[in-house]
Length: 355
Image 1 (cartoon, one colour):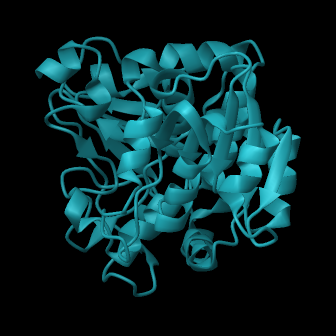
Image 2 (image 1 turned 180 degrees about the horizontal axis):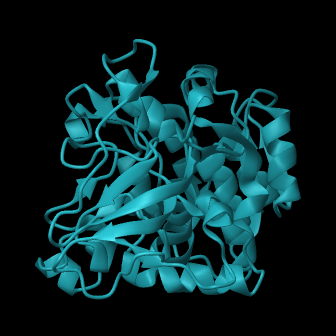
C-alpha cells in the first residue's frame, strides 16, 4: 500500500509502498478515509519531542488524525466489526491501568502515540492498525460520515478536551486563545459553542478573520500591539477567565498566562519546539499571588468521545468548518513543508490514498 514515509528527520518526505498491516489479536485494521495534516506531524518530521517520547526510529509512517472503515479484526475483538466507520484517537490506551480504569485513558500508563512511536505506524497510508480496538476505535453515529469526521482528529478532539474538561469553559467566561492555527481555531469554535466570549490572538490577519468567523468576539494581532497580554486584559476589563496556548512556544505561553485575571485558568495545548525543548520560564509568583491554575491537556478519552459527537450531531459543533483544503496522499509532504513558515490556515485533510 502507499504511505508517507519519514526516512530521515528534516529531509524531504516521500510516498512509498509499504506492507499492509495485519490485525493483532486485540486489534483491527481500518481503511483510512480521511486523515488531518497537523503541525504535530511537522514536529515529528523535524525530529522534535524526543524529551516527550514522540521520536520514532525512521523509516516510519506519519499521520495521526484518521477516520476509517474497519476491514479486518483480530480474534479477541468483541465489539468492533468489519464495515464500521470509526474515529481513531491518536492516544492509544491499554484499558487496564489505573488511569484507564479511572476514565483518564488519554494519559494511559502504557500510552502509545499513533504516528509518533515505533509501536504505532501512522495513518498517512491506505490502511492503519488500531491496537486494543474495542477501546481505541470509536464507532461513528450513522449521521456522521467518516470523511466529514476527519476534521475531528487530534486538533479538534484535543481542543474539545481542553475547553470542555480541563478548563472547563462555562457560559459567560472570557476565553483567550493564543495561536490560531488548526488547534487554536478549533478551540475558538468549541469555546464559543460552550458559551465563552472568545478572543483570538495571532500574527496573521487571515487567521484572525477565521477566528471571528468561528465565533471570536474580538481578536488581537500580536504584531500590531506592544503587549498582547495587556491588550487582552483591556478587552476583558482585567483579564480572561481562561487562556490557552495553542502553539507551544515561549512567547505564546507567557502571553497566554499574562492574559489572565486573578483566579484564572491556563490550559497548555501546544507542545514546544526544539528551541524550548519542553521548558518555558513562567511568572511563578503570579501563580501564587493570583491563584492561577496551570493545566495540561492531551488528546481526548475514547470513553468521552460521545460528548463531542453529540454536539456535532446537534449542530452545536461543525468540524468541517475547520477544514481548509482536501488533498491526496502525494500532496501531504508539501502540506507539511508549508508549515515551516506557519502559513497553514485551518485544517488540511488527506482524503485520497490510492494511485
